[in-house]
Amino acid sequence: MTQQSATNASVPFAKIMVAVDSTPASAAAIGYLRRLLHPGTTLCIVSVAENPRTLVPLGAWVGSRLEAAREELRRDAGEAIEAARSALDGCGSQLETQLIDLCKEGGDLVHALAEAMSQWSPDLVVLGTRHHRALLRWVEGEVSAPLARLLQWPVLIVPVGHEAGSDALPSRVLFATDGSAASVAALRVGARLVGPRADCRVIYVVDRLLASGTGPFERQLETVLTESGHIAVKAAADELAAHGQQKEWVVETALIKTRNTYDDVPHTIDREARHWKAQLVVLGTHGRRGLTRWLLGSVAEREVRLSAVPLLLVPESAG
View 1: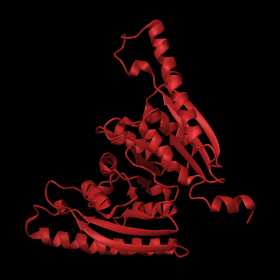
View 2 (view 1 turned 45 degrees about the vertical axis):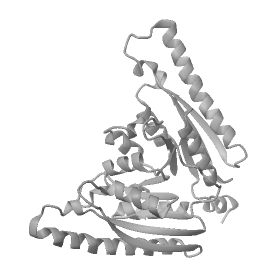
View 3 (view 1 turned 120 degrees about the horizontal axis):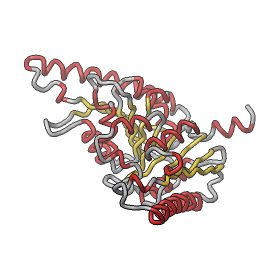
């Protein structure tokens, strides 16, 4: 093995892209990011200068006022990149930067980021979010399509209130599984973010709303879901055990049920993460509808809005 390949093998992710702006959400993402950076890592810091014409009614700004607004947005994006670069000074990683000017490139924020990711092909994307005003505003509304665009890559989402605490990798990691290929991909990618000494908890959520109202088949359907859950968590635990053979990991499993008609799977996962004091939640994502619908696009989007814990979303293709 060459020295370069040995270095790459020792880092969780070789190519990381982080999207930044001037908000505290980006500061939270940068604070978390430091623990992932090593001499073998290449980091691309990207910021988007939006087009002021998309932020105000057409015709409200003209001439010099419009140009001044454009310049201010470009300056803010540049300053966000420099602030991130300064915060990561001394990390030992190779740093690259990219400023995307939507006045020149056209399009919107999400699609511009997705295009930058597509061209750069990162192993991991890191984003900071605020639940009501975020760098990626698509987490606020019914915008599953833009979310799906970004979920072609593993995405680590860091909520603004999260404090990194240390430079160590997470030692309490919650994996949610449904036994699908997307869940397996999430396990494999998420395992790279687990510290050498860690507690891992694998859960399967039995969504009782899937069985509710089916009459005589209600109990039978819940039984089938429970049996499927036992199979899924065992397979996931075995997968994690294989990844952690050379590490000190304790792996436990649990089946969690939604509580009532006002409960759902995203809230159940978030409640379990808070109760168990998880430092990271890992979810697999795919775009198909089926019985275990909680892994579908809208669930990932709702989990982003809910979670006060860093959340890793992994597409099936990443496995």
